[in-house]
Length: 336
Image (cartoon, one colour):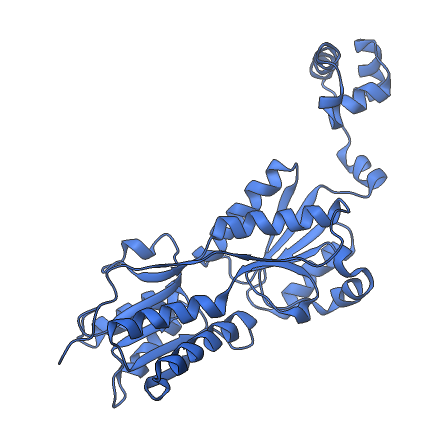
């Protein structure tokens, strides 16, 4: 097996030059770079990246954990993460925690063992084993959160203003004339769900319609949207509009509306949250809060790279813009 010394002799350069060509080619003259790469190819030299990692204490890998890899929202954020990481020369390791604290801790151990240079977590919980690292390093901790926001996490992150986004969705429904509105939240252990619910209540109070607000707790899944909407529609005062805290729950809600022999939006208007790629292809197309999923992925990588390079001096919380995509699932309530 060829060594770096063999390549250096064949190309007529030093081993340092060969190493520089392989690690920072932009610093080497084009002619020299071409000669070295020709020798690498002809000799079949394979750089020992594992040894390089041990020398530099860098793996050039980023670990990303996601609560539910099957959720289309997270898949789009992950795509943004991968694009930004690859452009910076990093590979992405992906872990599906399935909302389980034990799985989160298992992936946290990979960071502690230095199997990755940094961690991006898209859930609401910071693994307990990483708390001492955060307490010691503060803003220099190579951990970033995406989507959620809580000052208690103690790490930088990127997200939207969930409270304002939820308030705008409610203002849209109230503006159409709806008085009785059902709301299906995500798990209230999540700051994201709590922020959205706070925005809902703020809008209801501002409109003087808190009495017509009915809240059910879901888990962001299609099944919970179906289940909670079925219950909302079966009660005495049927809501004329339903706001779900995820598009997947809205898909379940749409099925429940049809099973009840009702039509959307003629009988019940429907609003989702996220604007996953399926939302505009539903029947009717779903009115929803549009999140910049790719940009969230890009931003969390940028934040992590700033930490890894030493540029980050303080925690940074990036609030990205959202928009309400108004489509065919919302309309004025039926006079009947």
